[in-house]
Length: 77
Image (cartoon, rainbow, N blue to C red):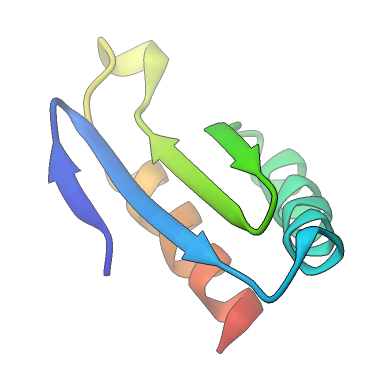
């Protein structure tokens, strides 16, 4: 579940290994590019942490963030 804190939507995704995590990031990158809305994220081994906020709206959470979060969730459901 995405958590809203510090004007960001944040979620941690955990995978079996690095290859699965990297594959997920690749798919998410294509989504982000298509939506022209790019996340802040980190990856260490099998964990990917994604933070979403809209820079053009003063670094706050907007519908753009919620739509990208929903699309990212569909990658793993």
